[in-house]
Amino acid sequence: MQSYIFLDLDDTLFQTRRKCTVETESRTLQARAYLSDGTPNSFATYKQQWLWQWLHEGFKCVPVTGRDRHAFDRVDLPFHEEIVLNHGAVILDKQRNIDTTWMNAVLQSLPEFHAKLMRVWTDIETYARLHQGYKPQLIHDFDITWYGVIKHESGSEAALKYLLDIMIKPHPSIQDGSLYWHLNGNNLAVLPRIINKQSAVSYLIDNYRQQHAGIITFGAGDSHSDAAFMTLCDYALIPKNTQLFNRLSCIE
Image 1 (cartoon, rainbow, N blue to C red):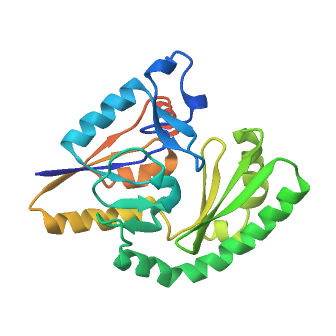
Image 2 (cartoon, rainbow, N blue to C red):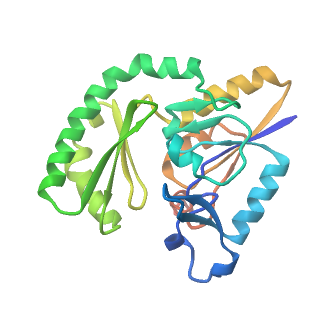
């Protein structure tokens, strides 16, 4: 039986220093990801370091991340399997080449959704020019615009939630399901429906089943956007005190 684990990265295997708990001793933290200038900006706690060592020794580890190619290249962890980038828009094979079968399927449908994304984004950028603190950014990777992200200089989720409620949720392209949103901390993303982690993981699981007589799959993630791909797996792993953990802990 071949074992695979599909791993979200940020806030699952590591997080920014600000998100490390106050009782975490700085001397036990290990840098896991870096800014483009080489400054470390994400760290693993002692428990996360132990978790990675255990997973890396016993599983084929497949990262499933919202990071683009450049941000992923600045992650200091040794992955040897396929890589899911940009919330599922891109899959790289073991040689770090684009999976053209997956890419062609996404690109075939993307133009229809891209036009709707740009209409939403025009409204968001207009709002950001009129209201201080909002930082909208379209995500470009492999010379393609995939989705958009908004942050706020205050670091407050409340400011982003206000924008979400008054402008994004009511938009016709959100209402008809062409686009969807994801909010976690100081990160509000607006994405085409065809770009999602679940579809990319489903594609890989089908491929792995063709390669092996039997497989067992695990999913690990911290946020609502990870839940869908984790439900495809035989077992799920959720870090404590994260968005997804807190949601489940409220279920009676």
